[in-house]
Length: 399
Image (tube, rainbow, N blue to C red; front, top):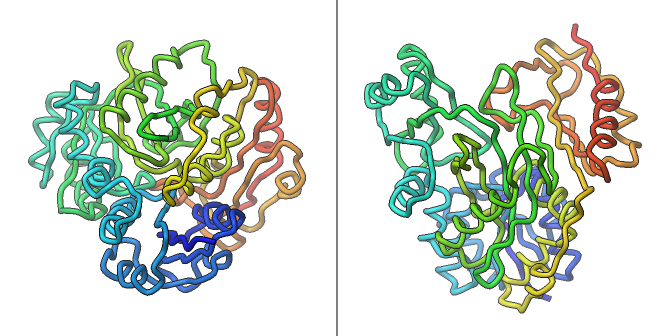
């Protein structure tokens, strides 16, 4: 039995903690709150801010773990890398962690390597971004490093820029700056994958549908291995080249792209799996690959079966929808139709983030969405039909 430390202990880390336990290991979990959801599944729990490297280092020295990991959290990646380096454990290293979490650094490296990205500028004030706004008419601003689309806004006027830039800066952890980027009109995609022995394997692709009033927040992601409209093989190869150009040595990956003028432009790439249980639920369902087992074994320095991934054949029929609810705005009186979420045979996962008495509004960032469900099966039309049944049944009645 090994001792494994999991940094971060929110809802999206529960499956990782449970997987470590199922493999017979002892789990130490650290997170900021005493009542963190993943603590219930760990053997030892310690309160520490994910961003506090030294506090987590003290915890690691106390327990002497054999591996330190995390998933579905960008802000945990640098801390995990730092601790692994300090303790001589397997990890991606702090240099790679910075590359995959500092959007300004990632943009600069992509520019140097000839990787297709939107035009960008690193800014400290609204005035710094005015030339980008004047050049493109519409721009996107975002923090240097954050997660869940916090502080990300589409900007069309100087007034909007002046109003929103401070929020983008506030969500930046490394330094008080933000990115101003060329806005690209086009569909957005995610690619989740796995690096084994330095080789990248794309495991799962989705196309996004955004909230009508919040163009930077995903309302639905549809997962398949084929597309009638887009060249998914090109997207897989584009992402494989990106990850291997960055020389990520191990672990999970989550990248986002936009289709624009016949190319796939990188929006961002993370050295972790996709959130809302994408990496823990959807990737293994779609690919048949237990990506968490690979992550844990590589972190322990154990051998893994790369040939299994190399020879894996992906089903052309499998289809998954991750749909976030869009109930509207108001004070919740009651939520109707929850029985279908509890009993639908095709449901992979669901979460309701609201209760009677809560006031809900259009989400400002991803973590404020009121809930979601994940449904999967064989055949696009079949899965879409069943997803519609759930959307028709699950409603909020407002006061």
